[in-house]
Image (cartoon, rainbow, N blue to C red; front, top):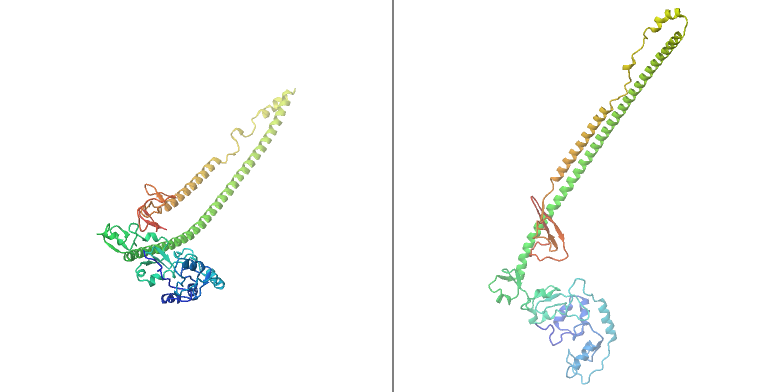
Length: 431
């Protein structure tokens, strides 16, 4: 492991070496920030003090440096002081530094912080696999200036830097073993993977990106096909809705006509029943009237017979007897009756038959519609190779449940990317 900072301190607030001036050209804020850094602790000044030669250091840093050194020299220009200077805090400079600290942007959420910053953490610009650390622009400068550090492998900043280091040899994982399908370091290729096919991780990554690109094209095509299918379904639903609305209107009109027809039949039937009732009542009244007339005649003859039974005029009785005993000219009422039976049973049976016919027809129509819908159902079987590790599938892959713990499953480049559901005739892809 190489040291990040050489013993010779390489910058100050007033005099800077050429490699520092190149970094200062990035922005004015970067220049100001660099001028406010202590060359001993490599961070913003804390209680800055100016020594007689004009250089600035943290009060604590310069005192500790002189305490551990022989003599009293400037760490930068090496000027020797016969007597140790009595230092005071540069208050105006301290206020300037404190103001810059407040303006200096902190590490953004999700960004990797610099491992070398001690007071104000700045965002890392690169991560070094050899140093096993992440550094901001300022603390990354030794990798641009020192020959040995220039050979270090730098990558974009990552938090889990240990994942990029071989746990066995503690060297960067720079190679990919195609036999074992894993990343290895140079030391691994000399032992466990000596006879294996290895390539740089960049080369394998580019090939995997090519595969992912093809997979992405497939997914985009799947998306387009499904979006097209969505439009087809929407169009089908729209046409179905229009057809359904027309059918509903026709059915409503048909049932309204049927209701009107039934109501008309009901009205006509009730009218016929009323007429028959009135005719029966008229007939009954005529029969009653005729019967009453005959009763009157019979009562009159009965009175005459009563008188003859008590008469003493024998000659008169014999003379009128033939007329009183002659048969009466009257109807035989035993076979005469009024027709009050309106054949209601036959009518009820006929109406019941029509009702059963309508109910049966409706059940047939409903059954036909259900069969028409059932033909679109499919037998669903889920694919365990693409299911998320937290999904638990049944033995027949027909049912799925969600669990809090992840299952131990085989690695798959498509696992979790989408869910594949196999059916007898179709394959359904879901996000």
